[in-house]
Length: 267
Image (cartoon, rainbow, N blue to C red; front, side, top):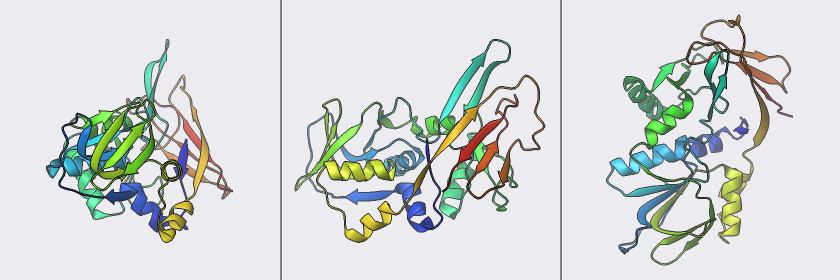
């Protein structure tokens, strides 16, 4: 599991975290092909799902290609069943999220009105921003965003080719898709590898910005407790001891309390 943690490159991270980057090459050609769509989005994380919804609501046909078995990307959730405790839900990817731009806040407000997200306190990150999480789980938010979208699961893109009229997108299982526009929202290292495999050269300034966005691995420990923990409300705490180590403990969405510990080595 990877997280983008570089504040030094916050601007690049912010742009890419919402839509990464957009490659738009439009033409008037139409294709009698079931694998043709006006736009293809690579990646079914929250960025790709938001982008696809925006396009579809604007009347543009869109399909998502994702290498995973389920939507969500870093909105990753795991259900663990214990004979004595029952089933508990762990968000082992993103534990929470907050808005730094009004556009995203308006989306969160809509999701909250629809009963998909709920507030999860303001003190966890000591930033004054309201933190949010999915009501059932964080992946449930991704499932909600994907419910009206065409998503091709287990469809890893291995190569892209641009012609004068369209993009050809090739997947690992041998399928070929065509589109007029292409949006890439997968993690940056995967995107850069995809450009390399496709013999596509990015502008040097964009390439430098993308290469300078840093990813760090972390270890997530999921544990079920036999009794209630002493975690303060709302069920999360962030401890900043050493600058190279952070951890986060979280309360389960169904009010079963468990420690959700995540260590991130920054150095």
